[in-house]
Image 1 (cartoon, rainbow, N blue to C red):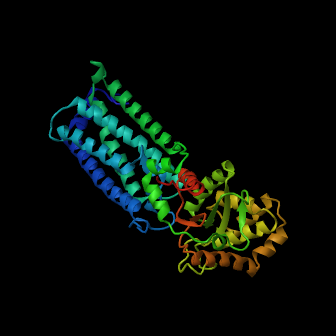
Image 2 (tube, rainbow, N blue to C red):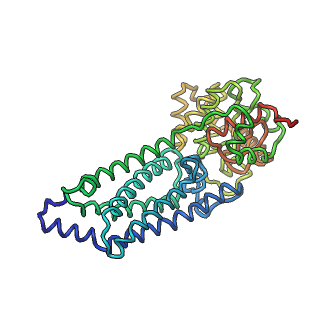
Image 3 (cartoon, helix red, strand yellow):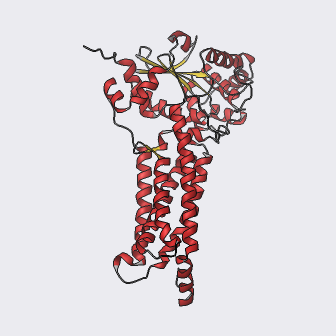
Length: 410
């Protein structure tokens, strides 16, 4: 702990913490945070306004800013997270200015410590979501995380300037308590935002009033005939007479498809008015003529394995296991999953090595290409094509729009 080295050590630490150099470094880091946040906000707004936009930090399937920023986790209280970051760094820069000019402001330092601690807490939640939920690395976000961490390292020692006793507001214990409260509040707010589900909206008018941008986006998407989207022998889940059919062209190795799997699985489980259809579109040129340079080398084999499980009546069970094991889809793993479902292994092996099985997958991908599918997941809601996974509540919005007749005037 600070002070165990004796009075001289404590005085030296306080002198360092109070020096203009440390405040100037805090100011520089805050300004750097504003710049990084502004660039991130620019990319976020381009993604929101231009469906065909791909950012410079969309590097690969797992290193992709677009997936993170376009997800529902990119908003807090319906405001883009980069806007909050710009505000936090901007306030932080203002609070660091007095110390950077050599002045002493206990209140500014107190607020700076609380702000840096809160920013660190929210950053920890966002980093966890990107890594464990979205499973995508956002380089812009990572840069922001590094700036926040460095900023906290520089700012938090300011708490050592405050005396152990004296007035309550100026006590060191008060500053530590404020920093801890800020950290916990930010973690709680971030977690609440991550798990919060928007309220259900019962009518098309209510949906369009609450989210006019989604209504406009949804109605602008192209529509294909249902029979061409379904294919000849589709894998389906849900009632055959459901008023809404969602056809998903997917890739078992695609992280965004993994998120769509969780949302669609929940959707079909909760709703009886939806039928789900799965079709293959592996991003691998070995079974997809639409792909020139494959990015998922295990996707074709995984798709074939799902077809072989389907041959034994276990397509959906195997489908679920594949998405639950996306990062380990080697041939041995595929056989392990087959054994887990108690499939006939010799029959499974014969099917997996049969060129006809690969041709089934290739046919799906070829038909997807004819329908305009270029990436995964691509989802058709009653024939309406949507590129990329929707946020969970948007599926409910889309179903309401599809099942309710349009409002008439007069």
